[in-house]
Image 1 (cartoon, rainbow, N blue to C red):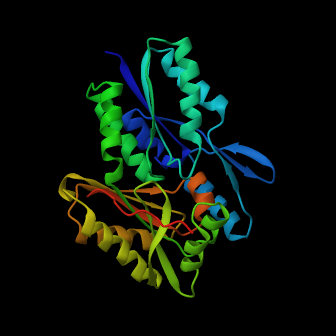
Image 2 (cartoon, rainbow, N blue to C red):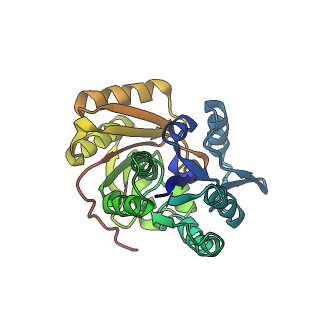
Length: 298
């Protein structure tokens, strides 16, 4: 049986340390600032992240692209030529066209490598929700499971990922087309901090409004606590968009007090998600009951 390489993309927000630990690679998307394209690298430093978020704070919009065709060809061929099968876990198709592009590229590459397999999975999530699934897939690959078995497992658990995120405003997401106009209005009321989830189809939607920042952080923990399962055997994932260190450390301490877990992982929201969600967002992720909520279209 062939070895399996798990590949994700810039939306997964996994750190270099985590990807090296589990043997995960990723396909780079692109950011566009002042008409200049740059690869959306997840190996960036805290200082580089702060520079991006300060740019957005200053009123400048940063555009993003899906994974370019050439990037998929380069990354996939690298591992196919080493006799790997591939499991690519991409950002929700409700937010990016990368999975669809990868599927087309895979068909072409399999003509060149007919003895190989490539599975392109719509994670129906983004940020560390997508990253969590990539980690689970990599654990299975490291345990010797086949690409087909990994594909079946990840598809079966992708609706068990629970995401709860709060932002100061939904305006950045509205401009990027990541939430509906009505959701953006709902989230921009004076003093109200929206809580976003990824629904059963992978659409970002504001599901609740909470008055005040601290109340919104408490709500994130409370919602995950209500819906998480088998927390004692999980790592809870946290990501933020250049938030204050004291705020993050306090948030993590509250999680540990409220939800028994193996560990709390803290990461930075990467350049693609960050350009869409804006500064000072905080999210929390864990596995739980099947997500059933579906957004109502405008």
